[in-house]
Length: 380
Image (tube, rainbow, N blue to C red; front, side, top):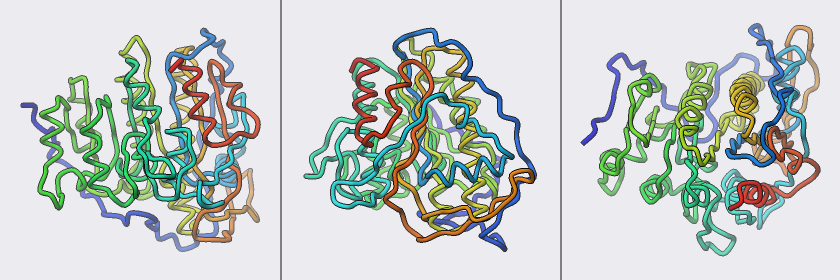
């Protein structure tokens, strides 16, 4: 039996609340970015194929147009998102409310049907439906999930689990054992090995052939074909408080692992904590998470441009906070903002795309259309 790989110099992790931890900034209405980054335009490269072999789907949870522009202002006028050649908007309403939650929003992407708020991988009647990740898996593609939150959280869960409620974290964790997903990286280790039913899913994953690791550094030691990286007991820290470039590293590692499959792969990456900054009405939290997500997009675009046969789609499940920009300075990377709510809003969210058949994702579309367009381009 493979052993769980643990490094002994683990830095203690602060346990954050499940939904919206605070970065405890003195001024939550203003952010000044003193570490802006250069944006390279990878999307000028010629696309090799008419149809994609791979899909990388990035979801910025809670990312509306104001969040995107706040990131652009903070980075002094440039984002990797702004280099993507096609853009549009997605309508986000769920089956039972104009304002969706993340579970219904992500399930619309994963099964192509609008469902009730809180539902994971099931239709509005509670009937489980095969997800785009499961379809890709059944057709010989490698599959992966990466998130800067718990891997059992609503968005990643919606691609692999089938439960009536997003709060059924232990049931969602058990659903991972019912699939052959090749790699998943995120938090929520407690839902796998500190369970009410006494099961240790980490051991069960090992028995199923997974290399199980509990830190990002441990990934460099894995050699198996299937990888479960549960890098926090609960939620990974906000990037400003110690998570660092975990999302970029995890995404690059997952891509490198999945691209070994000559048939292709499907990978979903979530920038999870943009949403939490919105819930907290915290401009510094929101903007630092937005910039972290954009740098991850840059890593993905670099791979896709060199590969020439990878479709990249970036969108959000909904907007969070009713965020607006009411001041700032683009030359200094200063953003000043206000919020209308501590919850979600019903506005449309942006969609960006690059790669073979990226033009299919432009215009105003339903969030469910993304599922059908993925099926179409992959021939599923």
